[in-house]
Length: 558
Image (tube, rainbow, N blue to C red; front, side, top):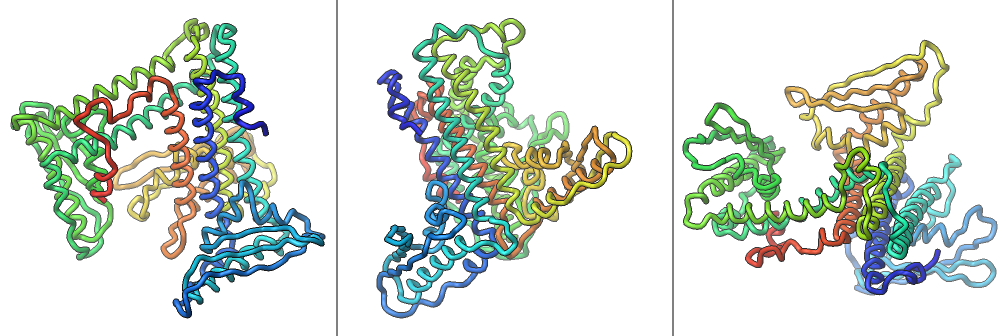
């Protein structure tokens, strides 16, 4: 692969450094994401689990460094031993180092021998020996072939390497396209209409990043006010009482307030209510009960009774502070909300200008592109579409590392009998039976999990919220023999059941896969957002010198 410096040789020197930095940020994010998934997928292998589950011994002996080495013959093996231990982009050896708390070096010596050296930082002698033993055991597990004939280590490494290579290829192609359009912009006169359906999704993702950045800013600005500082200076009580869900409601009369109280609580783009939900650990719902009455409901997930009551109290105290602030000489809450709304509107408008997704008809097909429009609309949006496709494929493969999913999907198709027709099935799930959000678990980050099941099972999935804390799942499929349709529907429901399995004493692999892919996608979008010219050029903290962004408020509310 050509170096980035060679690829950027034809570009303008002014743009070269920023573009290369942008690309390297994306690639580094890919490497970090692969390492995280690589560790989790290796931990899912039974042979690795058996070693990792062995408890660390009690500290004993002197504090000293650890070192050990051994040799393996590379002759006659059906794979490259060094590549097997190192893994894609060094992920496998890094995973072993993380899991064992050691350093590993590989060196070739004569006669096809590979020297493996393990280094451990100073610790108690018993701990040092255990880390060395664990590292060698994991390496041995990597090198041995599974009796079933399935090489799961090779499958994991191959999937992760393919994902890395495809991501880098997408990113580098974007770089080349960007240089092409900068160097010969006069050749571009129109953009394909296909870009605009993708452009709409891209604009939504960019607005999500903007709202996420503004949520942190809005939180810091509000928590800097004395009235909120007083509330959050009160420490939470000790955990006591039974474990329960929390719920409380309060009705506010509109006649008591000379302003829109719902708007005051919700704030610009819902930022204010999101801040309260985040810092208080709750969920808030507003409902109009009568013509002049607003009902505010606060929900808290299962916790000790004392903690639940404290969260409910804190949430209503925050709401009361918001409503009382209007009557003070200087309504700082209103000032913050207005400034944040204005700033959001300005940046959203910039985004809309660069991505005119609402064009229609002839304007859509013949929209002239200047240099910036060509770079963003053709380059970044095209890259975004390919990144979407690639993360979906990778998410699907990550889910398929789960043993139960593999068993479901490896079932042979039945004999084709019956008429060619449509079919659907429904199933009701009670959200009270699960320690997580059922709908979010099925849908997954950026709808990746639901799309993966739909692709694997060749079906369509629809979720509906029902009364009494229930979720209705509707699975439909069409244009196939009746026996095949029944199998597709059964597989889809079995996949959903697998996603919703509760592991009280084990790792939640589905949750970890979804969280990792969600964080990766959000980070990719943040990097892209921060690279957009003019849109992200003004830091959130600069639009008003009075309010500064700090992570301290986030730490303080945890």
